[in-house]
Length: 252
Image (cartoon, rainbow, N blue to C red):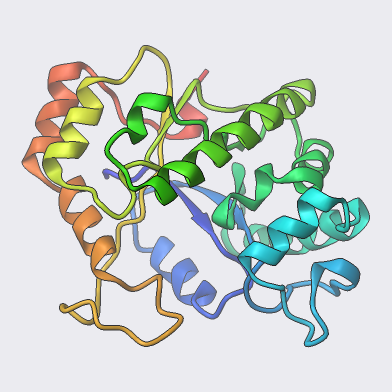
């Protein structure tokens, strides 16, 4: 009951397992975690969306192409639709869209989504305030600042299209370093309004965190986030601060 919303990656091998798990859980809102960087497309993607091998080109290259204008809106919309439809057919309702590695706020992708999504749909603005990244490494702080800058541009694009976004966003600065204490402290400092808290809880098959290359979805940090979200400190902080966990569909 802690997680009220999930986003599915439609084109990777865990999709069917994820859909099966969803059917065993209490109701959650389900959205598309748009992926344009890893694996093979769901649809007949071509052109700048993929490399010579027919696969997406990786995080850095996908971002570069989005910002340079090499990605064509028609190609983006077509693959976005293919991924969306796959999830819709599997779960029956898709409430929102965000992006794997936040690709949805990069250049042409953000512009395309503003015309693809219906105004009733939610999307994510990875805009976290400056003071949330004070104790991070310079590289991580630079990355969060880049997301903030891109999100500020996307904010106007999404608003003009009438898309729904939360009033506030948190989770970037805690990613990879979440503890019950840090999570509770974040909750106690939340501003008024709705806040999207981005989390990546999971189980780690290798308790030592020694994983094969390409296993970033299965690591010790995921287990730490799960422990923090299930901790008594988190629940107490929610109660003390008067914070209510809600699904997107419950927000007026």
